Length: 432
Image (cartoon, rainbow, N blue to C red; front, side, top):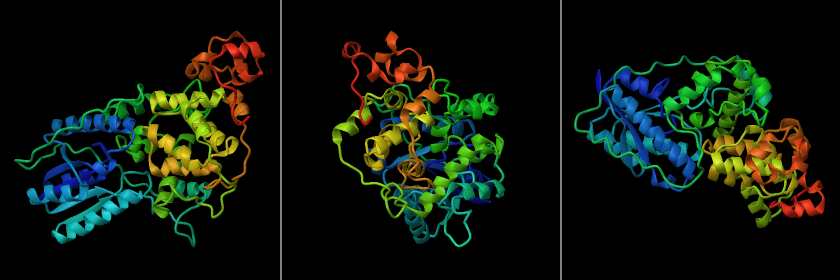
């Protein structure tokens, strides 16, 4: 058995169904699980930094329980990987393939450096259920519409889950390095990071998964899985999650949407910057005051403000609320989807380029939606998916105890008598 390999961890912070780590443990006597804290990414959202720090701490404990450790370095990920690999005389480096422009550039640089130092580099699956480049339409490089992609996704062969390594042996005299501290600030109620927390949440979710179709649009009931942060950081295997639910069911469809966005990002590295459709369906206007009101949850439209305040409180937002708030920004206020993309990116613990940008483009009518000019009324959405106003009252407390706003009346406080409106610390509606 060849002696040593380095596994560069990025968005695959787990032991179960971790193909790169499993292959290294099966083929090498010693394995260095390495994570490099890249200063180029230091300006990312506080919520994601905290989740990342917790996930790394959890991963270190799991590796130590199997005889290994998580090796941490700070600096350029390619340079630090080569430095560690040379120090332990590694024969090769393993890495989970990713799709963003940054990740692809990192892969290309690492490949050149590995070749220069006569080490092998092997890329593995693991960030999606189906590999992003595996499904292609006839005569095209990637699917531009979800429905045919979903049919191909359902019919495709999925790889086999790989087992958790029983033992991991670290080379002698390797300094593990310090874990990053948890940053201050951000949202107070972000879910805890790590594979163990993710697997606990998955077990709880599977108890009600068969009711997902009935629960997932109930804003107040909050019957969604909340697994997205764990998928974003690879604390859970997307394949393992998909295999634990009905392949043709509504929850698996959401995982297929995630894969669809990833194959789009692979084909379109500028997904977060340029519209997928050659022509935007509308001209965007510039209004910093309106953008700030939307971002802070002070638009005067309760369902929109509830969603944006949930985002700031939890670093997460219910999927139906994401649709409502995004449609309101782009359709009612007429503001550029890229402004909303940035705000979501600043707060979402599950924020990543493929899903965040792909979903914003769909909402704005510049992306994969086959009906780019569809109508979407936020008040009708609120009355349908928050009929008693419970979700709004939870996140917009200044409206919670107004007797005149009982039931669905809370969704239109501007209909109150003027003297009652003056008593509220709540703004008049924008864009209505």
